[in-house]
Length: 101
Ligand SMILES: [Zn+2]
Ligand SMILES: [Zn+2]
Image (cartoon, rainbow, N blue to C red; front, side):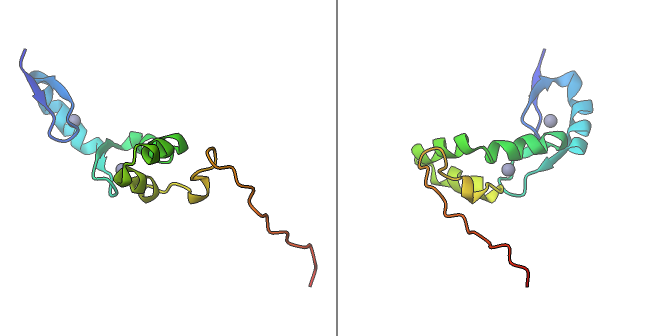
């Protein structure tokens, strides 16, 4: 059976499935504005979660992948989380006195 690669999601499938897949695929997928990767709409959260994962970020830093590191922040990584597990610095909590007027 001949295989074909979906131009949208790059998934390989039988030629017989290609037409119906492609229609569905374009309808259900979206392109990430940040990294230009095609993702299924229902996988959008997963996609963002992957880029907001602290361990993935640390791995990218350790591997010295600058582009990957900045992609994490582009996808909304919380900067305060950045090196939490590596470099535990006590953050000075601002004590707000409970003063009324
Ligand atoms: Zn597809
Ligand atoms: Zn993305």
